[in-house]
Image 1 (cartoon, one colour):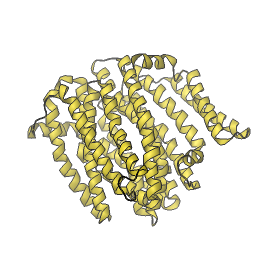
Image 2: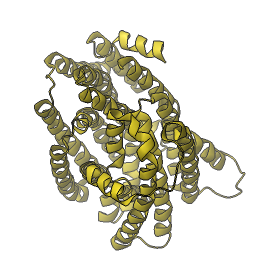
Image 3: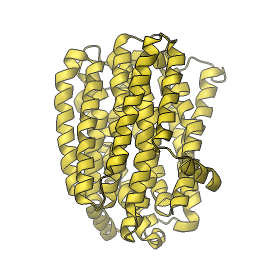
Image 4: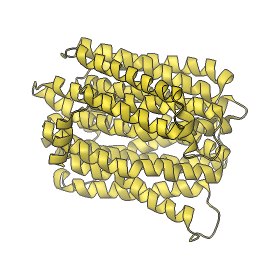
Length: 479
């Protein structure tokens, strides 16, 4: 299973490395440059608002299904059509609540129209995620890898035509970007459904009330957890846009740094998506779950420390690679956001382990407290520091909730604390910091210094055996 996990991880990371960073930093950033910070900031706020009640589309079904299929693979043919058609009912619930909430907070006219299209996009994404939960549960990691990049690959093609050709005959606007997303998600969802026909059988109109009630009851703890975590992960930009007179502009500034965080965060999210079925299967068969915990900590947390700290040290230089104008506020906001990648990676490991082991009550209590903390911090920091304050709130919230999840994992799941491993991670951070100050003392050119610090971090990770050549060889051999 470890070989299957490593080979699947290699493929999914490779494909996403080739596609998604280009979309985020090439296409998405170019869209912001074309339409301006205020217009993009308004879109960014609407996008995050469409995500706030996204849980009504899912109600925890995806994570519950991943765990359930990983432990009982034969259930896919029995349950797939029933769950799929339940999702159409959930979309109606989601659409009504989101539109009413949007009107209540003050959205109107074009904003409501754009929000409506974004809601359709969220529904299509939910279908894709449900299909991917079945691929993951069945350990079909290669199929999952292909589907994970298809929507972004299509979107790159569509947006490239709109941005860099004159085929449409008029100036690019934000609505085109949203329409392109709809088409890309629709095609990907259809492709994923076709790929699953062999395992799931023919899709039938098969809505079963009793089955739906039992499923929603079982998945509710997952739904609550996802909802609470979604709120404290996505509330920042909405509060920025609503609380400040220049909220659109501040949300646009925040989006500049958040885009980089999103680019690195997607790899951690993909890693977690693969860890959940593996953890669930190991716990089911009383396997060596500690093997995969240590593997995830070494690979994911080790790389997040290297990437997060390097980006923090060179925050303005990295932003200037993509944006023509970068203010000190943008740079500091990005610095706080990118540092939060480290505790987010911890959450993806230990939160996923707790989810796989069914410790939802404790996770929900943690997430609720995290939400309260995040809202209070935003109310305190946004009026005083604007976009920078929202980024501070994110870093503090992610740090506190990550530590709580680590403590819970070692208390509630039968795993041992690896002192040597965490000492190596701490030493890695010290080496990165020392490398940065060395480049400053020697007055090395900023981009050369960035490369030097990053390479020093990678070398240290190998020397400390956080990254191992044996793992890389196994990935390449099994690819």
